[in-house]
Amino acid sequence: MRPSLPNPLISPWPHRWAVALACATFPLVWVGGLVTTTDAGMAVPDWPSTYGYNMFLYPWQSWLAGPWDLFVEHGHRLLASFVGMLTIGWVIVLWRTHERRWLRHLSWAALALVIFQGVLGGMRVLLDERTLALLHGCTGPLFFALTVAMVVFTSQSWTMGATGSASADSAAGLVRRLAVATCILVYLQLVFGAVLRHVPVDSDPGAFMLAVRFHLFMAGVLVLHVLLLTWSVIRHFRAVRPLVRLVLALCGLIALQLVLGAGTWIVKFAMPNWAAPWWPFAPFAIQADGWFQTNMITAHVAVGSLLLATSVAIALIALRSLAADSASRPQPAAGKIGVAT
Image 1 (cartoon, rainbow, N blue to C red):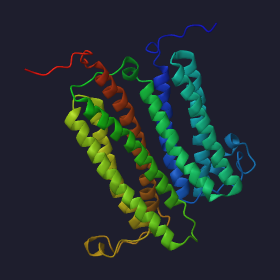
Image 2 (cartoon, rainbow, N blue to C red):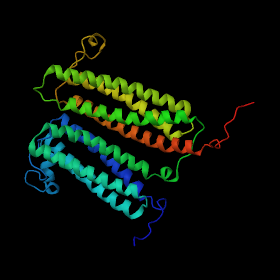
Image 3 (cartoon, helix red, strand yellow):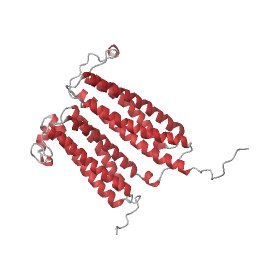
Image 4 (cartoon, rainbow, N blue to C red):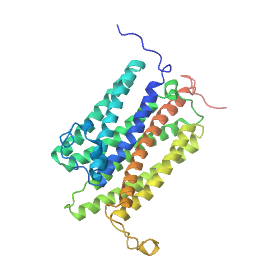
């Protein structure tokens, strides 16, 4: 017979470990974006070894003093291994200290996803296949979003339940639907962005521009959707402070992402002809694969992942808080429907 586990509130370690995992996964996502930006994916041609060495025994002098693409790719592998070990440790901690069965099972899903992501990265190297690189780029933010969800699930506020707010059930349902839809839209936009980043150099220019226009259209839809979500939360659920803070952060991130997206286009391709007269740095030449171009594109990737993580947290808190609020309101007794006099 399985011994009784302690109350989830007694041990803070599942939440602490989940926070550490999320914090380690975020740089892994943007370092992976840096690998794509610098075209360093094939800097190390073998996997899981590194030029015949055990990955963890590769001479650090050769790594630190070697070419930049080798430094980035091998560093990405080491960071990915660290995240994988953190995930294993988190599964062990959760199973030893938490009683919620569904969360323990979800931890196995997180472990399976990080293993799948590692295998995708390895197969991308062994087969030198851009399609696998695309899938690898789409799975990374998904795992990061899952780690953020684990942070929410193991938090004390989630375990203890949420306090409701005085607002109509119809408004609660609207915010919940908007929050969930925002997650879906953000992830789809990340996928479209990954497609653009992995377009073959010999692809049809017309197909590429179609993908660009669709990416811009989805960006506009996402901005309007985030504004609607923010307005609904502030109007109806101002008392739910965590939700208000998160939607305001989401607005800030979406504004920053728009600026970075425009900057990415400028440094990667060119300033649009109609905007050149108003651009004070028109004579400034952008060096291909230079530090300015690399940092701008990588920042665009990093903020996209933060958008997904924030939208996931908003959706989970909205589903938890607003559902609890609706359930806590008194319902009219059956057969007591009358007409006011």
